[in-house]
Length: 238
Image 1 (tube, rainbow, N blue to C red):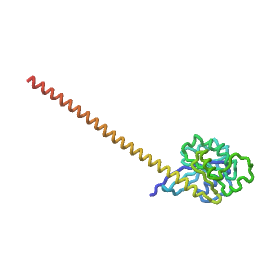
Image 2 (image 1 turned 135 degrees about the vertical axis):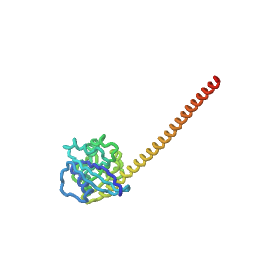
Image 3 (image 1 turned 90 degrees about the vertical axis):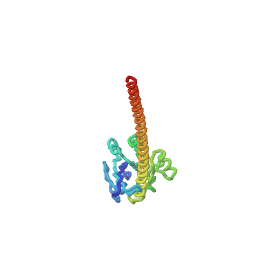
Image 4 (image 1 turned 90 degrees about the horizontal axis):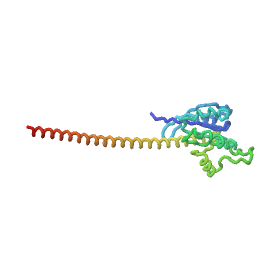
């Protein structure tokens, strides 16, 4: 039977940014036209990786500030964290730095973070009706992406469209394969550590037995010497 790996994926971001539509596209391969406010929704999907089949449990979270006090309940034991924003909204991108990074800081230590620009189909209109004096705007080139990753500590940055399906499957495969590669490295390191520990214990046992054996030889020699002395004394008396 093929071994299945399990991963917990949590998605966060502003309301209306497209994160729920992304999870529905991943899990059901469909696009939902109507917006339904998310409280907490769970999805599941089996994804083929370079290490085998992966069972991904996906946790959708509410972006509304009214739920900021209960949203962190989704964070424990997270394996992958997706931080989404709306490519057509500079405010949504701005909130990555002012809202979302501060929220996950300290709550998702050592969890691989990926930043996802949603609504790629609307990207060409992202600044059409927006003020031109925004201090931050979504990445436009590789230099911007590199800067974003340095600022956020994210593993990577992607853009996709849940509506058209553009880049969705490629992003998911890339993220899962990257995660499985890390899992493989961690498993190999753990195996090496256990092997070294086993060798150390074996050497310790051999050394301990050697010491015990030496002490036992010394004890027997002492006994033999004592017995010889007693015999000599008896002979002298006779």
